Every structure is written in C-alpha cells, then in structure tokens.
Length: 172
Image 1: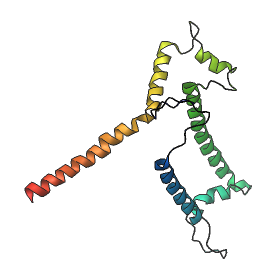
Image 2: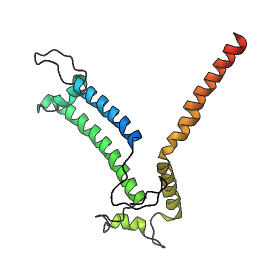
Image 3: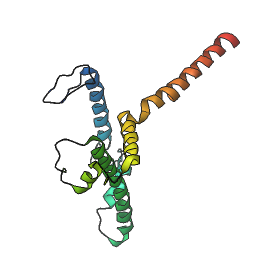
Image 4: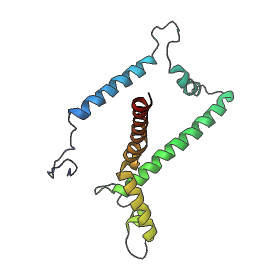
C-alpha cells in the first residue's frame, strides 16, 4: 500500500494507522454512542418507561406480529427498506467504477468490463468519461464540504463577529 498523502512514499503491507490525534476523538465518540445506546435499556424491569429509544423502536417491534391488521406496516417497512438499501447499493456501484480494485472477484463481470473497454464500442463515450471525472473529483474532494464550510459557516461567523466588533467599538 502506497501512502502519498502523509509525505512518505514507503510501501507497507498493512494500512496506515492513525496517530493519537485521530484516536482520541474516535474514543470519545464511542463513549457517547455507548451512553446513548444505554439510554434505550430500561433501568428496571417493572415497566417504568425511562427509555427514549422505545418510541423509535415501536414500529419495528410491531412488525414482528404477523396479523392481517399489520400488513400496512409491513408494506411501509419494505418500501422504506428498499429505498434506503437501493441508495446504498447505488453508492457502492459508483465507488466500484471510480476506484476499480486491481484484485476483484468481479473482473469477469460483463457489465463492468463494458464500461472499462476502450475503443469504438464503449458505452459511455467521451461525455461519459467527463461525467465520471466530475463524479470522481467531487468524491475525491469529499463533496467540497470543506470549501462550503470555510466559505459559508466560518466566513459568515467571521463577518458577524467583525460587525459586532465594529458596532461595539464605534457605536457603543
């Protein structure tokens, strides 16, 4: 594995491990996640309703009862599940085309090979290459979230602070 982003071009046989500046925030997030998960567990077994997550889990618990009056719940559950799973599969499909693993069990998959083929029989053509490059650049730059964050949130707060500072020093 080559890691060019960290200033060294050494090859390793294992992925790069993050240092403690990345490890400690992740551990804090794990603690918060465990705390929020423990809120969903009732504190006693006598039926006092202290858990916040029970209201969120109620529809999925009701789906386990197989009666005719709950068939509408099953329909809504399957409809929502198909939509969310299809979005995840679409994202995996795009990542498969953009990052093209060297060693893949899908190398003999005809659909992927038809997108990879070069020459006059390509399905996507030059416009398809431009679209793939735009999607790749967008995903490589993390959807430009950092640029939007710096421009709108940080810049907006900085402008508000400068306006407040001017008002505080000049007007008051």
